[in-house]
Image 1 (cartoon, rainbow, N blue to C red):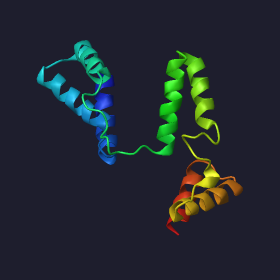
Image 2 (cartoon, rainbow, N blue to C red):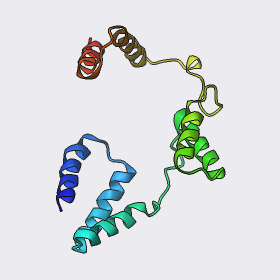
Image 3 (tube, rainbow, N blue to C red):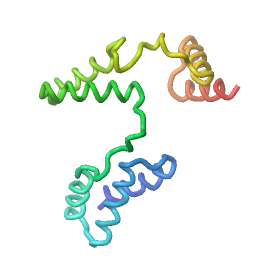
Length: 148
C-alpha cells in the first residue's frame, strides 16, 4: 500500500510537468479502468501490469517523421531482435550500435548544422567542463550561461 501511495504521489508531482505521451495516456486509461473496477492490492497491480504491457491499439501517426536518433534506435533494435540477443549481451550490442559513428541512420555530428541554441549549449558546456564543474554547481552555471 505504501508503494502505491508513493507511486501516486510521485506521479502527481512529475506528470503535470511533462507533455502527455502515448504511454501516459495509456497509464491514465488503465488507472481509470482499475479504479472503475474497484481493484485493490495485488489484484490491482496485476491488472495494471497486464494493461500497461498490452500493445497500443493505434501506432504513431504516419505523418510523424522520426529523428535520426530514433531511426538509428529502430535499426539497432531490429538488428538485436534478429540476432535474438537478450540481457547483458543485448545491452552491449545496443550500446555499441547506438554509439557507432557515421551510420546511415544517423549522420555524423560534423555534417549537422547546429541551431543557435545548440551552439550556445555547446559553448556553455565547454566552459563548464573547462572549469571542472559538477553536480548542482554545474547546473547553476549552465542555467546562468544559457540565460545570458
